[in-house]
Length: 361
Ligand code: PMV
Image: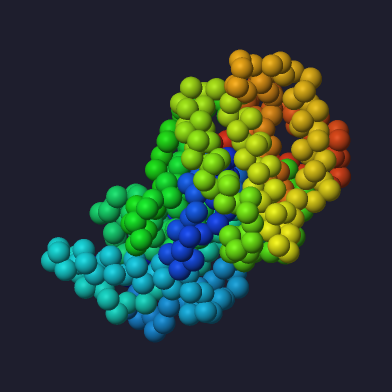
């Protein structure tokens, strides 16, 4: 094998059952399972080029055009170490794989959207990084995708879900070493093909509280988080899987909005409190609630209301993602643009495929 260079891209994913809290901060093992939708790569993606070369003297990393100190990024170091160890064990087992242990790599990664503004940039970033390095080391097709998702998890928890397309669960697992804390595809991107995501950018400023620090504080101080983990999420994961399997939009929308609300309630229950949503975010919640109220009717006892048109969800930032069926996209966009002509720009996205190749040299 001579010089090896690949370019890959990985999409953003936006959770409808949120991950918030780690039970192991080194291995990035979550306190609850989560479920997300992977968006199409045309809209929000990270593109990463990895070159491994016997002539390189050191590993180097460029993020959005700026060189970063790769040794200071512990998570990146962990992901690279694990990928190299995996390559070595495959090499030891297969003499056809050349020995490249001493080769260093240069990694260059870019997002086509604002970084760290609560638009899941770390998810697509680490998914692309893991997938790109695995491709450059020629191991990506030799191990199951779930194993790659485990490695992406070491970079950023939510990144494990971007290794798959469509509807993706991250099962929290129970093993102490995290081997079973991996992502799994629940349904592919064609399963519910009229589902679209509208991204309303309320602010593209970097968030004040990075998710790692925020989660840790929530785990340490929020009683509500403990109840969420135990009493709410396990049942919600089952209900969400069932809603997706049946393409039951009413159940999907109600669960999505309730879960976003509870995630932000848990942030406020943190001490000192964390608030990721701003006045524009709250106005979006109010607007969508009023809009849905025009169409919804009571459902069966204990079940969701019937007739939802839009479902909002917010990650660790003020920007909203609306999951809307295609037939209502034009109406929802017209209403949003009429109410927020200036501060909010919107982008439409579709459900997308998993991390993928762009090119190889
Ligand atoms: O993977 P992290 O550390 O960026 O955590 C992201 C957590 C949320 O985006 C708020 C929720 C989720 O499940 O993606």
